[in-house]
Image 1 (cartoon, rainbow, N blue to C red):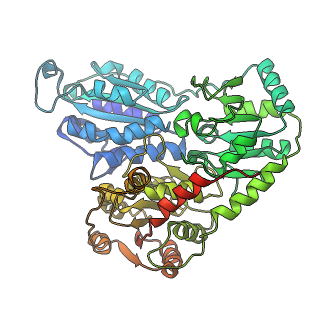
Image 2 (cartoon, one colour):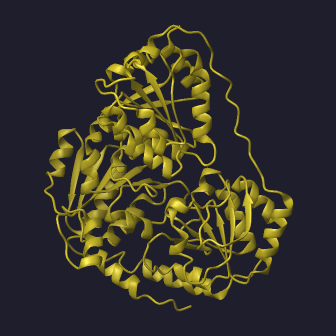
Image 3 (cartoon, rainbow, N blue to C red):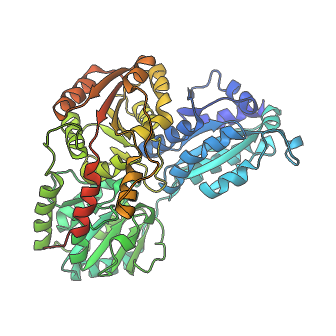
Length: 544
């Protein structure tokens, strides 16, 4: 058989549903071998979007998403999405074409060392040099991508290797072993927790990756320990749960940090440093920390460990629950929770034009009723989503956090709708981020994926304006000109709604959620609230 045929057979063996990408001359044999395959190729308009789609697919399913590009510029266009998957620990397999082996030793058209380029943003990057190694390389790629901590890997298939004759069969797919910490370490950690008067749990993305959300909920309810989540572990407890202190991640002195200041022990579970560095939440009191994660902790002066439980987080939580005593919730938690509820919802109903970001977030929550998957782009709106939007279920809010990549929302929403066709999917984006990959509305239309796109429209790079104002009290070179977003949407056959006043927003969202079409909602936002928030948080003093 042809090598590219064997390659596709191996992908099928790994359970690949979709390949997101763009064909090119150097991967044409692989594209041809997909004819008749059960794998569906999702054609996009930019390779960056393909990588973002694979990224979000990986986050939502726990299985490696697959993206494809040709050599040179096609391959490098994948890099932003691959970097996002790498730092946010989403399992992704990137496949690129390459020039024939006979010309890669010298200067040649479109040739650069793509394997080397990808090494810094992948767990493993490998070229296939002889076709009989294809089964081993693909099996290893998927195993490495999915193993803790998950991330991106890269396979390069030169065009002449793809055409070669070969023999072989896919290798067996075996489950990744689940590890568990030693019983002695579990008991030691339990003793420390039992002695603590004011323990606090910081939950990270690893709890969602390990499918430990339900185990965590049972543990905290039984032991009566309050929980703070990172941007990437939103929904770990429902928004009205008495033990949730909501989200941490702002680099200013947010209200939730008062809980860290008052605690005498921090228990981190599935927490990745890339989510929120310890110096932002443990710089003053230097609380002792129990680290529960799939891998040993990174070394950091603001992360003083007294115990380390390494293994599957679900297994570890269940083992720990046998030895931790039920605790009385310390009084500061109740007071802090009351303050948080008050502070986070003070502007939910504020009326006016343009519309305050707090109102936009509140109305999205009212409209979707806790059922939607939210994909947040990066920009000023991301910080409002991260701080204010509290989903009801885990893995229902996807935020580009470690890499913080603009342009993820629209392609990410398309991938989410492919994974969960019966769930509403909302892409929340700024106008700057939307224009980076907004052309993928054409892809959504062609696929028939009815996503909703909400644009925070201010004709500026609002987050950079926010940073400039905080640092210099002036701005420079952050404004741009937008197209008519409704005309832009209509050009793809997509419904567009313009929202200028707060009273128009909720009806527009409800209409979009009920029409089962692709809908773009262009919302004029009042970002004067950004600097006001910085000032409020900067002046805040904990009072518990």
